[in-house]
Image (cartoon, rainbow, N blue to C red):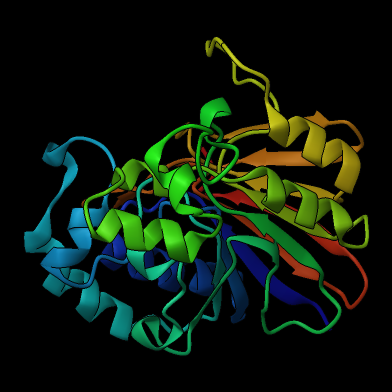
Length: 275
């Protein structure tokens, strides 16, 4: 029996709209969505304090939205397995607070994602690339001398104002190595950034996501971050880039990717909404 699986693009705290959109999609499918996945920038900022850990300019912090986000999350009825993007309540993710988010959310910094579908192998890598932050600390800096070597230790330094919150956004070499150590050829790999350079984007640095895809060889890759829909290949893998959700009651074309799982294969159905 086919099961519907939906991968979500960036939501950026528009959780009420995401609930509305998934309700609408389920009606169109005429069947329940068994499992959802997120490519990051979901934005579960339940309290005003959570917004303090949003990286980027303060103009993108909206603590007044927390009550509506919390209320919408109570109405979220689909199992969701997620990675982080680069705009998240990172103090709840890098040191994953499962009780805080409740039973509907599972998460990984890097590795295999726990979810509800037997036999489906899904890997994920949270965050984005920065060539200066592929290790937890830079040789010679104060954090290096303190011996910080883990997310827990780095998060403590951020909370004590000894390190910038932005440092929580960047994945590490050790996490790339962990993913490469897993059995190859998963059905799906979730990335926040693309494994190939989007048109119009000038890469200054290497793109480790491309090398990761080549080594891990997933059947499908889904990514977000650039807020535009696209379909392309990277090595032997089929890739789907997802759009940002939108605003108000309007969901932008290509925000979600709809798949079916037949017990052995993950089959792409369509991007949703269609243009």
